[in-house]
Length: 189
Figure 1 (cartoon, rainbow, N blue to C red):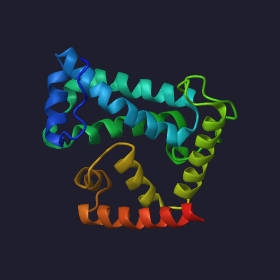
Figure 2 (figure 1 turned 30 degrees about the horizontal axis):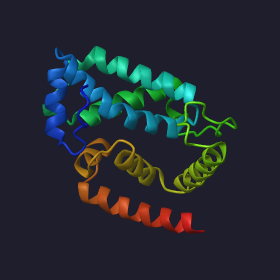
Figure 3 (figure 1 turned 180 degrees about the vertical axis):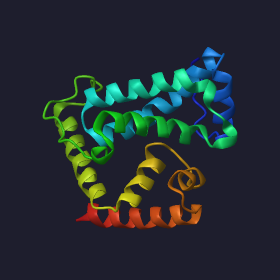
Figure 4 (figure 1 turned 45 degrees about the vertical axis):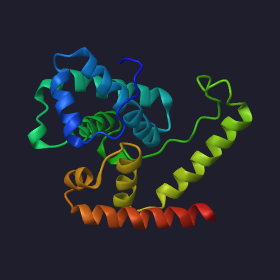
């Protein structure tokens, strides 16, 4: 994609139309990839805690997206929902359905790909904070965890999440409020 900023606040319709265009337009495909890759990667990394495995699963996700982009139908749901399902299926394929939410321990090594401004001390603090958040997330119910992940890692809106989970958007919003309150309380301790 060109040097212009990515359209962070585009709606469901925008991404659906862009996905249909991406079947034949490389720039449209690049925009989808640039926007969704970090979100899907962070979600997968949060599930695996293994950068190599997350790399493998995210690669598989975007290869499948590319191969099946022509099959995406905006009338059946949001593009982000469709892509999230591909990522979930790739993760299930890798781990197996029952253990897909299993979190593997964080690596002890520092990330060599971290920006130079991140000293080993900062990297360690960041890992400690991430571990604290991970432990707090594991104390949420499965529904709360999924809704938080979909909201913050996948940047999905309540109607999209509701459709995937088969619940009402108001239930998504209420569950998200409860999850935030519980996380705040857990992280303050």
